[in-house]
Image (spheres, rainbow, N blue to C red):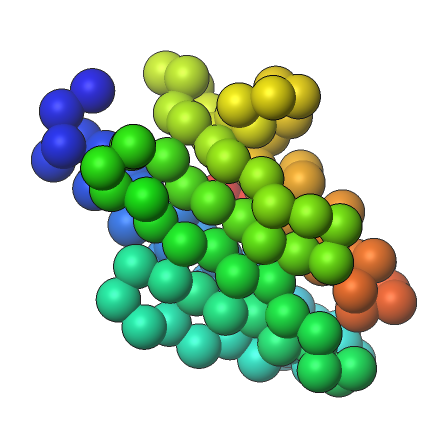
Length: 109
C-alpha cells in the first residue's frame, strides 16, 4: 500500500470513529466525548477513562489504547486487523468502548 492509500484509509477510519460517536450521543444516553487533534482521536467516557486512536504513519498502522491494553492494526486489503490476534478494529473498539462506558455501544466503518 502506498503512503497516500494508507492516509486515505486511515483518515476514513478516524472519520468513522467520529461519526459513530456522534450517532451514539444522539441515539443513546451514553455520553462519549470525542476530540480530534491531527491524526489522533481521543474518546472520553463519563468515568473520565479514555480510548485513544492514533495513526502511526511510518508503520502504516492504526494504534488503539484502552483500559484493556494497546493494540496495533494494519490494513489487510479488506479491513483493519489487529497484528497479533487478527481481530477487526471496529469490533474491538465496540467491545472496549462498551466496557469503559458500562453500556453497549456500536462503532462501525
